[in-house]
Every structure is written in C-alpha cells, then in structure tokens.
Length: 100
Image 1 (cartoon, helix red, strand yellow):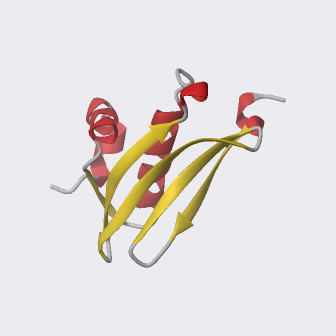
Image 2 (cartoon, helix red, strand yellow; image 1 turned 60 degrees about the horizontal axis):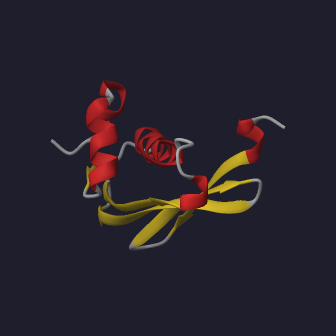
C-alpha cells in the first residue's frame, strides 16, 4: 500500500466551525480546526499532529487541504495558527486565498 492510499483527510463542517481530520491506516494522526468568520471566510485556528506521526509532513498536508477547499469554493482564509500561517507564507501557490 502506498502512502496516498494509507493517508486520508476527512472534513467535518458545522455551522460555526469545523475541522480537517487526517488518518493514516485508519488511525487518527492529526487535525486542523477552523472557525467560520463570514460566509466566504474562515480562520485556521489550530493545527496539530499526534507525536507518533510527527515528521511525515502531515501538518502541511492539512494546511494544503484547507487551501484547496478554499480555492474550490471561492473562500478566503485568515491563518491564526502560526504553523498554518508559516506554511502558506512560504508557498506562493497557497497565498491567493489569504485575506488581504
């Protein structure tokens, strides 16, 4: 089984907030929590990866998933999470969804 097959991200979205949850081999590996700020804007509040899964780039995968969600739905992101902010600022392809 390759990494792509073993790793999946599930979005759980609510009226006020939500999260992207990452699993590896069906085991919880990390999550990114977000809050809806407006109809077209959400903040990334916190990104965490279980220490047992550290060093695999899972935090970055969660940030990229949130950015892809924003791009697909015409949304903007306010990265309050310092890790998410750093990932987005380092990658120009991710910056188009930032609040100006």
